[in-house]
Amino acid sequence: MNVTPPPGPSSGPPPGPPAEERPKGFDLPRLLAERGAERYELHSRHLNHQLPRMLRTIGFDRVYERAEGAYFWDADGNDYLDMLAGFGVMGLGRHHPVVRKALHDVLDASLADLTRFDCQPLPGLLAERLLAHTPHLDRVFFGNSGTEAVETALKFARYATGRTRILYCGHAFHGLTTGSLSVNGEDGFRDGFAPLLPDTEIPLGDLGALERELARGDVAGFVVEPIQGKGVHAAPPGFLKAAQELLHRHKALLIVDEVQTGLGRTGDFYAYQHEAGVEPDLVCVAKALSGGYVPVGATLGKEWIFRRVYSSMDRVLVHSASFGSNAQAMAAGLAVLAVMEDEGTVANARATGELLRSRLAALVDRYELLHDVRGRGLMVGIEFGRPHSIALRGRWAMLQAARKGLFAQMVVVPLLQKHRILTQVSGDHLEVIKLIPPLIIGEREVDRFVTAFTAVMDDAHSGGGLMWDFGRTLVKQAVANR
Image: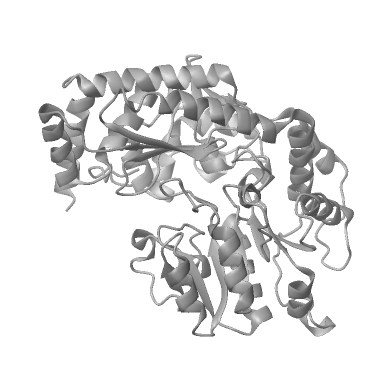
């Protein structure tokens, strides 16, 4: 979100009975029944205090009681359509029965997990299934998140090539740990965390810039999202293939970040597969592989890279993760891949995404504030821009002068408050909404979203109403926080 709200309540002593009066043992249903209503106060007191302040300011401080598939429900039984999927984590929607059963089964099996000195079957089985979708790659390292998958790729590229520098694209997002942050193309995430690693940014699609940097002879690899999450910008046609050829000519590696775009999101198993002949040296996946339950990340790579990193028994633990390859995460991943195959998830993402984009693209000529609809599969960007009519131009200029990105926020808020649809602005200072719904949605959800979006656009173009009143509130907040 793009708003910094007013100060919240001051913290005080934690509520609840004294420790000596609390019943012994652990009863989760009782705990939630007794303390669940304190959720926002607990977060304000003990976690990131800005999150509840922001949610209250824009009216997103809802209380969701349960969730299933692509929907949430509140205490009054109202349903909410999820077009955000937990930033892409909920690729199969929430609480898919096959994934739930797999987790129950693995817990009931009482496996001798994480002994550290054996080889359990589930990691090998999940690696086998992932590599079946990536036949040019040979081995997998399992970690716990997308940023850890990227960190692994950066380390492996540096060690395997004996070089230090990584190239990345402007506006890229690869995670927020220090190595991943060094290849993050957004200054807002990097500010205040220097010094970072000495990596180098190039524009997405600029082969000339890539070749100039490679000519310096110190580049270990180039990390790139086939479609950037920030702004939903796809690499130009032919760019990945040409970049791969340049990199290999200079003995550097192509690292493709599929943390958000992988596992069917773009209508193919991996987004790079939309371009013929692209065979990355390292591929990073996470998010949807978890089934929405157990954090997991994976870095897939070529045989020679893994053999160089793990070159002797002395180096067997040179790169490892305490919870990597745990049985619950591996079971969730195996269940996710089984569901994707059984239910045709990738094909559904391709067909439903085409329907959604075509329905939205048909509105571009109808609304002067709507400038572009782009994306692939069920990763869709809706971009707003300067209108041509005088009255709307004045309002647009007011928002832009206060803070770029406020109009997109003005669209996101009524989609939730009036139409019970959860979406997100695609990045700070961007007039773009990103849609990354669960890959299981269909025509019913497309109809609901397009109908709601059309109503919001009608309101925005009417020249008045609650939407522009909210816009003035956002302007005041943005100006006050300068």
